Image (cartoon, rainbow, N blue to C red):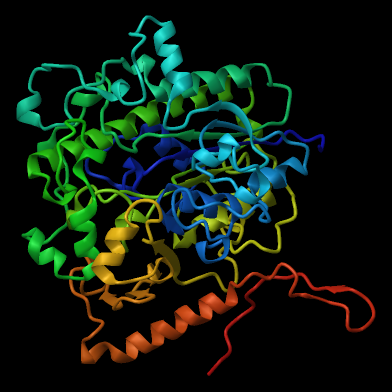
Length: 533
């Protein structure tokens, strides 16, 4: 480890939409601490995840690989142990990367005995990460803390999210209005923050790497007092969707399937059966209000972390990265959850603050308060952290470091488009229904998206494609794939997608050669420029 103090605080807030920050003009949600972080750092306004749901998105975030390369395509799909990741790489620098929360990484079963408990859950840790507090779906460390504080011993992973019974105004406000049985001071956000601050308090003279991974604002959407009353559903933006569910579902067979299959009881504490797509407008608007309140709760506790770093003198040596794994539809297009192909599931926030941008470093070339308007992707986060730590970026990475933007520069040949993937094979869950509905094998159940400023092209392995004209139809209502006037665009974007896939194939060994009698190992960027036509 070098003599210079260099700490990393890598924060994820699960299921946080990219449009939900006060500093970019959201009409309702209040995020004063993140706004301040953005003012002292760099905010990336066109940032997208590579895959959904949690497991695949985090696999890309931690490995710097597109899903087509890491192939951990569903929650529970093993992540191949041959890939490196951010934790493994920073260990080479002498750090002990420590997790507070979860990474949703499914272990490679070839590395373990078939009876190993790691093969019973998709919520493992990425290899190389140490545990400060592991807080998976069972929530046991947090629940144990609640019981120690006097809560009922029967509390479990389900009942801990039960709302207060007979709460005044609940019937008029919607099913997610009633608060949790715990207070804000006892919430899982507060607990995880407390535990991380305790851990840091005895490491003020060390270099550290912390991954703080909050569950909120992921469902279940239930907020403690006073956050549950913070936003009125009459003030929140209404969902972007057609007038009826039936007309929306006509866009594509996959969308119709998602409308039919995604259950309401995964999101709403009333546990009612039926598809989420048929949720009443009252409940949709209140869910949005509650979702925003959970964001403000996270923001409040992040404020505690930032205050501690400043007061302890560690702020001036810490790289802070705030992002999410994926977004959330919140009723847009009659969808809830993170799935499909619409932007709402893939657009996520990214704020990067370095000691240079915050004014603590002697390096005055960094810019402060910039909002970057070019396309960036989740695969860029790992190489960014590694470059700041002056580490080598693995050859296998698909992403590129964002540090040049911190210094006010746009790198040559920066991307003008983003890509993401969605795999709906549903092994262990929806697979029989998908086979019955579409007659597809699991390997036929995937799609890839190419999105730029003008068009969005969705190619499906075995279902019809889609094309949206984003200049004329930014809400993505009209599929132009079969429109005769758009066939040249369809061909152009299909060719672009093929070129993207070819360019980003695994290159772990392909730039090595021994034909000359000496091992030649060429290292360089994947992309140098376009061939002029």
